[in-house]
Image (cartoon, rainbow, N blue to C red; front, side, top):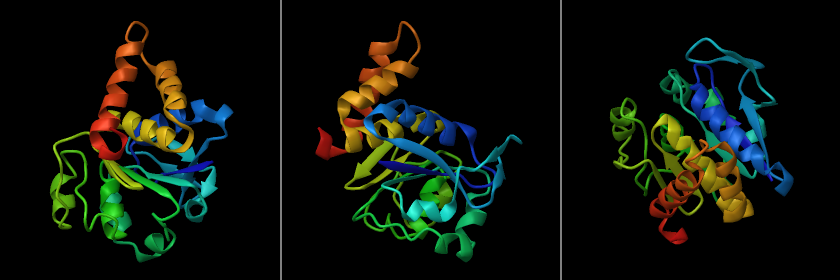
Length: 202
């Protein structure tokens, strides 16, 4: 099960690294998260340089595609060349976004009939695309999910694992990363947020 964590220049480290780190905790279940970038090296919003593991067109082949946020997302969605490299298919792929990554989903036409979650800074830009923004950290309908707020990446990762390899694997991955003394509470909070955000899982 291949998960592409799409990471553009100017990316938010918390989005890409928390999601990929949590998902890769389920490697024994056959899940692998990969950092996918449009250029060999991208630089984060805080100046951290990261070498991509796969090129951007790998996302079209992946089973799951998670699109992170960053300070250059509006430039990304205005770049037809980059958008053409993302011929994603919600009929066969799980597709999620984090914060301003919702702009990418909107540009691709995946939010035409559903509301979305995003961060407070990105909210007016997502709404300008005609998308209703929810005051919630996570929302999913079918194979499309959105998360709002950097630490909501744990919900996006948890949803990915629940949908691909099951709730037990998701619980194990969250438990591993959760603070000592707060593990059970963290796992239950994450699972509750996922269930609340996707009615089909309730």
